Amino acid sequence: MTTVGIDELEALRLPLTRYCYRILGSAADTDDAVQETIIRANARLHEHDAARAKLTTWVHRIATNICIDMLRGADRRALPMDLGPAASSADIGVPLPESRWVDPMPGTRLFGTADPADTLVERESVRIAFVALLQRLPPRQRVVLVLRDVLAYSAQECADMTDSTVASVNSALQRARATLDSNRLQPLDDFDSSQQELLDRYVAAFVNHDLAAMVEVLRDDAVTSMPPFAWWLRGGVAIAQLVTSSDACAGDRLLPTNVNGCPGFGQYRPDNGVLRPFALIAIECREGQIAEIVTFLGTGDRFAEFGLPISL
Image (tube, rainbow, N blue to C red):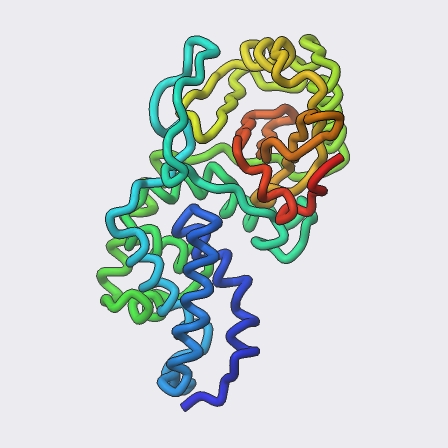
């Protein structure tokens, strides 16, 4: 039997967060799942046999069961682009419930560092678009794919964690890979000085409402969205026209942060002479231009998580 203590379990909080977030797609649900995993594991430490399973494998089995239970009957989380065609006007409609959307997460909780230059493989597996793609998979396929292809557990370990057989794991993995292959995402650019210059140009164009400069930094096929609204827009020119002509953004400012291992911003809006948190923004860059912008409205209360001040 184990001699592991609560300190060893607490050391697993970060890898558990990375695992549960990919499965659940929700920051709040991830926190709940990780906390419940730590509590259950601590209460059952006397059951852990190190000769039969590593502590990480045993704890991830507990987390897996908790995540699958949480997903029963839950809405599939998504991004607006997953729910319907692009909008043809600036009318964004009515907001949908928070439970419909994939949440952003700070890079510090996914990598242990705020540096966007983390390995490309890891960044690809937690980028907003990939986490949303994972949510298309049935829960058990989602679990198997993350355990096998992202966390590199063996088929036998995965079978033990999911109370199934190796054959069942391999079958679920094959189906999950097929779904991802049919919806394959374009790779992201590496973060370097040229990307930083691109982001600086985007900020300048945003602040100055400079239409020509905004068009230059956006891909022709760029998309933008604003959860909790199902509305989204495609086309660099259309996006640039919307952003630079909006009176709602007058006086807003952007501060850089890390969102899901990718560049992002905290958007601040004037309020009685003070700039206050308004929205978190996730940015994806491809082939030297900005390819996707997701503005998470109503996330001002989460700025501290992303290392952003609560006012300017």
